[in-house]
Every structure is written in C-alpha cells, then in structure tokens.
Amino acid sequence: MSQRSRRGVLITGASRGIGAAIASAFASAGDRVAVHYGTRRAEADAVRKSLTGVDHIVAGADLGDARAVAAMVEQVAATFGAIDVLVNNAGLFVEHPIMQAGYEEWQDAWQQTLAVNLVGAANVTWCAVRHMPDGGRIVNISSRGAFRGEPTHPAYGASKAGLIAFGQSLARDLGARGISVTAVAPGLVDTEMAAPALSGTDGERRRAESPFGRIATAEEVAGAVLYLASPGAAFASGSVIDVNGASHLRL
Image 1 (cartoon, rainbow, N blue to C red):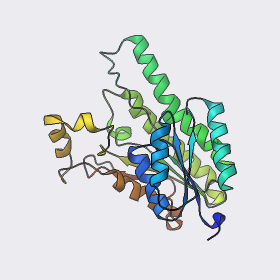
Image 2: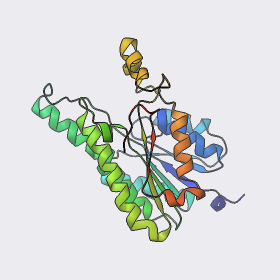
Image 3: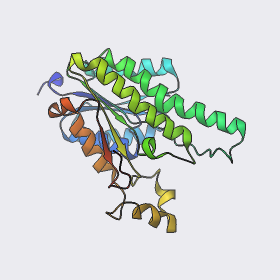
Image 4: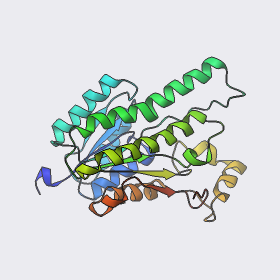
C-alpha cells in the first residue's frame, strides 16, 4: 500500500486520554497519524510507539502560539504529503466560577482557554485546510457542556459551543469541496483528566447521570470520530454526535 493511499491524520492533544484513543483508532484503520502535543513530548512519543502500523509522527506546538501552529501543520503536511483528516481535540479545562475567581484569575482563565480551545483550533484548521484534498474531513471535539453549561468552568463551555458554531460555518463553506466538518460532544469520559471528578460520592453522582450507570470510555468517543471521518459520513457534515449516555438530551 502506497503512502498516499493511506490517509494522513492530524490529531491535536493526542498525548493522552481521548486524543490517544483517537490516534489508536485511526492507526488501527491503516491511517498515518500525527500525534500532536503541547508540553507532553514523552507521552506523545509513547503514544506514537504504541500505534499499529508505521510512518506515524509526533508534532509539538503551543496552540496559543499562531506561528508555532503554522510551523507544526507545515511539518505534518510535508511528512504526509497532505492532511486528509484533522481532529481538533486539544483543550484546557480551567476552574474559575464567577463568584469565587478573582478578576485577574477570571481574565487569565478566559484568555488561556479560548486561546487553545477555540482560537487555537481555528488556526490549526486554517493551516490544515490549505493541505487538505477535496473530500477531506474535519472533526471537532466539543462537549455536552456546550449545551448544558459549565458553571465552574464557563470559558470551557463557551469555547466548546463556539467550536460547534465555527465548525458549522466551515461545513457551509467547505462543502463545495466535499470536505465534511462535524463535531462530537462527549459527556464525562473515563480518562486521567477526569479521575478527580470520579472519586467518592461525587463520582457515584456523575455516573448516575446516565441511565447506563457509567461514563463513556475514550474508545467510545474515538469510534464516533472514526465514523465521522469515514467516506460514508460525508452527508453528516454540520452535525454533532452526542456521546454522553443520555446524561444530557437536547432537541
């Protein structure tokens, strides 16, 4: 199988958790994967080494740095020859409830969160689309918090809602090129990042939010992403798949 017959896939925030599971899913499907990291180079290397197949790479960049983003995307495109699939997964989750956070803390939380979760994703996408062939795929990882709110993490909720609106705008714009733009909105997912929220009675309450009595696995989120990036999902462009076990329902 030639390299260009295998898709080139860039996944941001792939050094652990959901991103690592998404990387594994694409690699198992025969694609070449660029494992992006912000600061966790060692973990990104470990993910790359764990992937099925060959020709996978790691690509580092602070998504809050527009020049670093451009350089990272150029590196991936030069290595793969194109970026067939982009998954905007990277995200910050900074606690800053409005009545408890100081004003400087509040500003910092909003600046940092939007810089990575929304503006960073927009910049990665701008750069990647210039290396994306017709028929490419963009999948944005949003959150149920985009719809139900995040009272202790309002910038996170706003950024994930913005990411959906951003993707739907691109779905309208890029459809003429056959590029499908979609989103996955998980609830709480069983990852290292979620571990503190899953301990003790609080964890029991969180699991009980779903009639399944549990939270999602990272692999379940990855399965939704893999479907949306598939050839058969082109006409799903503009849509959002909820992966929250019916813990939050929207019309």
